[in-house]
Length: 216
Image 1 (cartoon, rainbow, N blue to C red):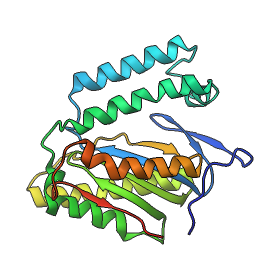
Image 2 (cartoon, helix red, strand yellow):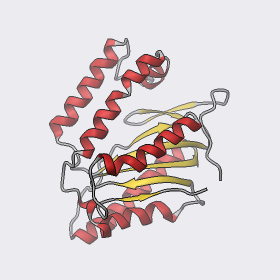
Image 3 (cartoon, one colour):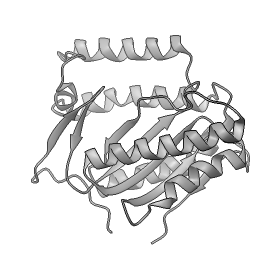
Image 4 (cartoon, helix red, strand yellow):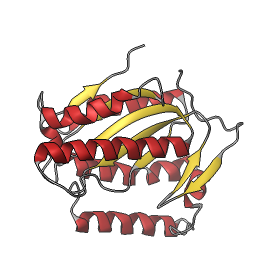
């Protein structure tokens, strides 16, 4: 199963959940999800409000169902400026908020096993990294609805097993996940580089993360 990138000549649909999402059959996605305690509430609210103010300043209603499409229609410079909000969020995650239980090799292995279980069946798994309080991965070969269902499956199964291992119950992962449609091979390469370098950026030591790279 080969990775496919966004093709502007092919049909694109938009689905809506907590956030609107772009879809293209068989696309490739960069996906992030985080533990429930990975960001303090005030940090998350401030980030969300600052992003909303930026969108409003560019004539985009952040509550509109198609605000992401409107962002895509901005100039290259404006879209590059908007990218800083993702960077701020990623930087906050890398500071190590929360208990960071995924730092434990046995707990990280639960996530790794879940991700690799359906590789080549339900999806084509690309590179991934299990950080102390979040996960980044590349996955392809799925329409968005199938991808979202698979992400929920990964999160649900791993949360049950992690809670069992920790002797706990309740929510482990934050409900919302984030995904980006990979638009080109160049973007795919950049996402692979980001995944590989994320542990270094967060100053993690060997054994405090799991980084898996797709060969071939």
